[in-house]
Image (cartoon, rainbow, N blue to C red; front, side, top):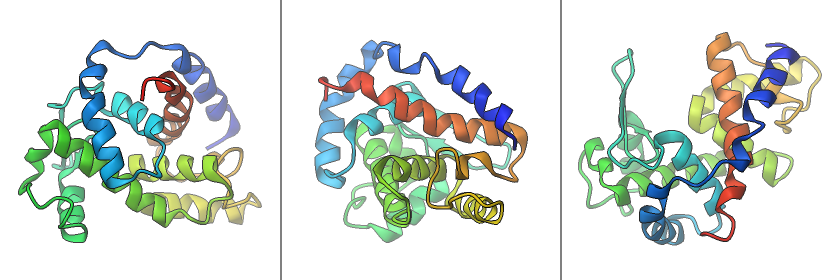
Length: 201
């Protein structure tokens, strides 16, 4: 994709940081705090909160069915197949849940999403700094880690720094135009919107 697409993304995300926190979010703050401490206390809770807002609008019962047949559940819209992988990898964390639909309970949906964030965070340790690393984690969460690796490879082939997201990897992809815009907006909107939770969490 070309630079004009990035300009459009910036325009679309310009007002995200000034938006108010949805009233229904406050009900889930205690569970988010608990699960954050339990699963990934080093992670930025404000980014996770904005990720919940972006994924489900703080609706714990959110369900999305894709044309491909995959289904995502809960506050952080974790895919059914991702849940099954997480359950194998982290059985001690998800010992009380048996099916992806259990993520419709706020605690398990938030826990599974934070587990997935933490897992992706460990995979993107190549990022140049913390902000770049969060952006790559979010891109992988939204579009898949395999796509992030392909984007990094293409960026490097074009002379950009594959360890830097902003102004580098974010400019290059072979995704469809729509998927490219969605993926790049995802990282930018969440990182810019996270500031609204400062002082609340």
